[in-house]
Amino acid sequence: MKTIYIFIIFIVVGLVQLFIPVNMILNQEAILKSGTVYKFKTRPVDPNDPFKGKYINLNYQIDTFETLDTLWQRYDEVYVYLTVDSLGFAKIKNISRDVILNSKNDYIKAKVYWYSKVDHKLSMSFPFNRYYMEESKAENAEKVVRDIQRKSTTSATYALVYIKNGQGVLNDVILEGMPINDYLEKHK
Amino acid sequence: MKSKFQSDIKELVSEQVISKDVATKIEAYYLSKQSDSPNRLLTVFGVLGSARVGMGIILILAHNWDNFTKTIKTFFAFLPLIIGQLIVGYVILKERSETWKESSGVFLFFAVGASMALISQIYNIPDDLSAYLLTWVLLCAPLIYLLKSNMLAVLHVLFATSYACSYGYFLGNQTPWLYLLLLAIVVPRYINILKKKKSQNISSVLNWLIPLSLIISFGAFVKNNEQFGYLIYIILFGLLFNIGKTSFFYHQKFRRNGYYVLGSLGTIFMLLLVSFKWLWENIFTKAISFNSQEFYFVLFLCVVSIILLSYSYSKKWFTRFDPFQIVFLIFTLVFFIGLASSIVPIIIINALLLFLGVFSVKEGISHLSFGTLNYGLLIISALILCRFFDTNMSFVIRGLLFVSVGLGFFFTNYIIIKRQKIGNKK
Image (cartoon, each protein chain N blue to C red):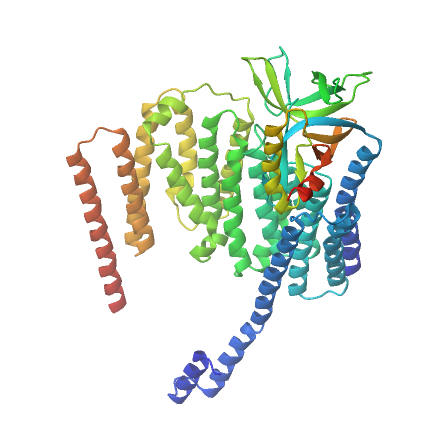
């Protein structure tokens, strides 16, 4: 094949290679710009990703929901409809296998973790359970959060998540009213 | 500095074994053969260097630089990608050497991965590893052909295998069908390498890597009817063995023929595994569904293997009949007999293993091959050892069996050494 044709194909490939990360950014920015922000009570733990570095894994307090539907299978998609409680934290209103038309509530597309037939509770994993941090800080974060939760019951640790059309972008994790990075910087 | 080869030639000339004219011709021939070796070495270093720089960038970015703003982080996410693309563009336009193509291709490969990883990091996107690997491999797949790169083909197979494992084994009840597509993408390049670079190292690497990738990934296609899993693997090993037996691969050096070695070892391993009684009494008696992806997969593999076997026979690609070639067919029959009775399959499989062991010993002796002879003895020993676990043989019989295998080992190897000596004397 002529060099110029190979070059033209390469330009197309190169554009696709650029388009994918750009599209990732645009998607996330759109949610951050026009999504609704929710506070999710959370408890971070600290694992690793081989390519993307250290992150804290966030377990959410509202990641279970009581339901009598026993047919849920692991990794099924579940639409979780949200509302807020009296303290302003996110709360599950109801769950569904499909999008509920005309619902005024925001929803997120989560994955089923497992269903307990004993207490009829469905455990789910939300698509915003990773918060990437500088490697030195991530190691310390879990310990700091544990200490905060031990000494205080009122001050909640929560995640700020922007939600739009079933997708969520985790914007920050708040410890005692302060963004986690600032908090860890201050309490070195 | 003169090489030993050059001093040998000088000696041959001085001893008047060869003429000066012949000596010059021999030297010229070997020099022309060596002329491309420095380039090849440069390519290897170039590729290794780019791979390390690329992986280094991923690790540096994985540190998560807190002090940078989102914009600066995004800029750094794109920087290696754009640099990589510019270099590859330049290499294509200026038609630079293989070294340039391989090195820039490998660098761009890792830059694509690094850029997506950093964006995920900036926006806390928790996408699973398999989706990330799949996008990465697909984005870089065209480069294999645009750059005619060998190393990118290797990376493609490696990362496609990681995708199959991550999606099929670690993500629950999912089948990595797209792995087959990923593998199909690299096949034309692989065939091209086999045609043009048959005796180069890259062919050997792929001749091992591709069967290994299949062996690692095929388990991920078995989800519910685990019995079919055994059948899938025996047919797969049969297919690999038959590919390795075709004259194209069979006449190459042993170490270049991963299909043959893995196919043969895999067949024996699987047969030993299914020679146990408990498997036929517990696993193969479970309810089995023929309207399942596992069965269709078995059917597909079986058809491909039979077509290869019969086509190769019709083309006379096989030099000699080898019972290893039809083990997968025998086992497929035995498997379906086993759904009704558990005794018959166990007897047939044990007899088959014994036959394969004895056949290898016989082949080893008649072709004076230590490797084949000892492989046969190993099969017999492994078979006896396995039967210790599920039969009530007395220790005396077990001991006698091993003594006889040991004696056989000494005796047969001794015969070959003797024959070789006689052959050398003649």
